[in-house]
Every structure is written in C-alpha cells, then in structure tokens.
Length: 110
Ligand code: SF4
Ligand code: SF4
Image (tube, rainbow, N blue to C red):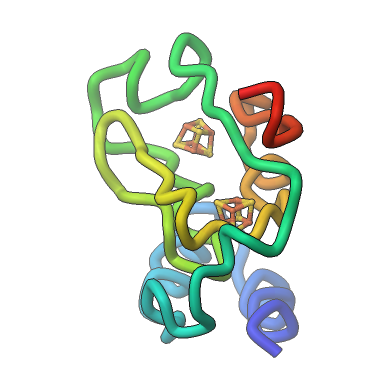
C-alpha cells in the first residue's frame, strides 16, 4: 500500500525534489514494529561509503535509502547507518540508491 501511494505521488509530481518532500511526510512504521526482522533474511545491505552521495559531498542530500526503507532502519545521517537488528533484507534500499552504493551480501560474508 505504501508503494501504491509512492507511485501515485510520483505520477502527480515532476521533480525528484517534489516527490522526496511529499514522501518524507508519508507515515512510516517505526523501528521494531514488526519485531526483530533482522532474523528473517540471510541477505544484509552494506553501504559503500566511497560512493554514497552525502558522504562524498558532506551535505545532507539524497537519503533515498532512508526514504524508501519499509522498516525505517536507515538513519538520515552522514554517513547513513543501518540497524541490522531490524533490517529484513528486502533490498529496496539497494534498488533505490541512485549511485549503486548499496549491495546485498550474505550474512556469512560480512
Ligand atoms: S534491506 Fe534495506 S530497505 Fe530492506 S529493510 Fe534492510 S535497510 Fe531497509
Ligand atoms: S541512497 Fe545511496 S547515495 Fe543515497 S544516501 Fe543512501 S547509500 Fe547514500
């Protein structure tokens, strides 16, 4: 349902800035609402900070990973941090990162 609203919002706006502003106001779940989802998956995201836009620029920009994470486990900080205790390994953050700074790895390979 959240993503249906996202598609609707994006279709109603023309710029990324507009839709980020609107999406930021969409209600999201809080950390831990679905329990310790970190136990659900064998895949976990890793951020390559050398590619991450806010880390490289030193400015609070992008944060698509924070915006789209359905578990709200990524911080809107420089650098962004992921709470793996509650990350369910869905890979949405990887899909939404514009510079491919996030990759999903097997739990064992971390
Ligand atoms: S894989 Fe990424 S988007 Fe999915 S829950 Fe974990 S941090 Fe959030
Ligand atoms: S989406 Fe990618 S570039 Fe943007 S803040 Fe997250 S990791 Fe960095």
